[in-house]
Length: 113
Length: 113
Image (cartoon, rainbow over all chains, first blue to last red; front, side, top):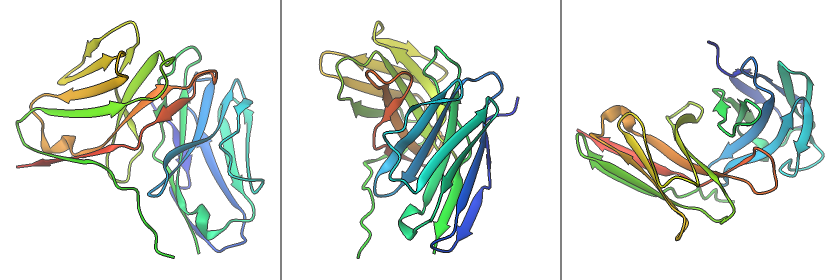
């Protein structure tokens, strides 16, 4: 079975550019989570969705970050405009409703120059 | 300015020995706990979980112990192998936040031959 799929796996961009990260959760899972991992702050929850509805976005750093989940099989995390301090590994995870066990994707390594 | 990274506790063990990784959690209301393993360049991988109505749970070569009195969680790995070298994270479910998890800072396990 396919796990959580993320794309791209690596992204290098220049400050000010728009960045879009994509995630396909495990089929049948109805909760989706976006995390950011840095050496400074560890693994931070940015936002999570349940049944395509954002439940908790308190971890979203600022208005430059936005996330959408138009359907049960796809989500995006957008940064506009990007800044060097956004450089991190961004993970998407999904879980089945009623269970807390989250399954992580391979991550997108973002470098903003 | 200088980028000071997150200093992870490091546990170094010899191949074949047993490993014990400890974690203190903060929320006495948490009722679900989980351990993840993260290898370099990969996403966190589920290892084992435990609910607060249990003190111990065993998997294949791994055991999780939960001490609710002192809010302490540990992961025991039997007969540690080089492939066990990774960063290990404990996580607890967040109070009043659905299925979101709070992650600890992680412990780096290094297995030497």
